[in-house]
Length: 149
Image (cartoon, rainbow, N blue to C red; front, side):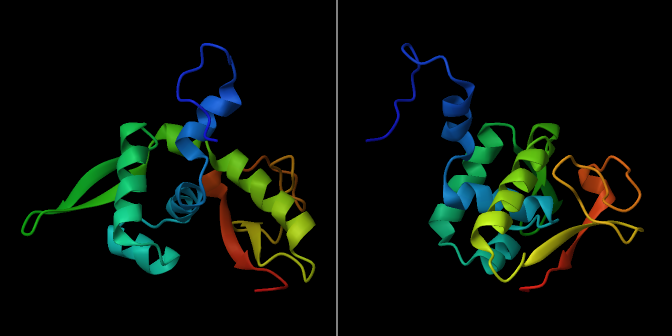
């Protein structure tokens, strides 16, 4: 049974957030966008998602203000999808979910390490660098192959 989209009996920000980001393809689109993917065909190539499903998720994320469509070509007209501030604010939640998955579902070690750009350190659960101690933002990190890559 799906959760209702009205919340007269539920005053819950988690439930409301899940209505926007609570399915697999949406989270994977956001993950890809955080890794720098911007164009429809690139999302499709990376995710292997059906075009209609991807179109639906991208449109929904734009409607919700998580992504915005920006033209990059006039003839034919083409757009790319860029994270808004609201979208970038999902980064800590995405990193926490990734670290949780690494702890519980990556017995061979994480497939990806989130490294501190320009430093040998890695992201910690407190969003600091385990080497230099700096507080890390999305622009301070880069993905690196992990032990099970």
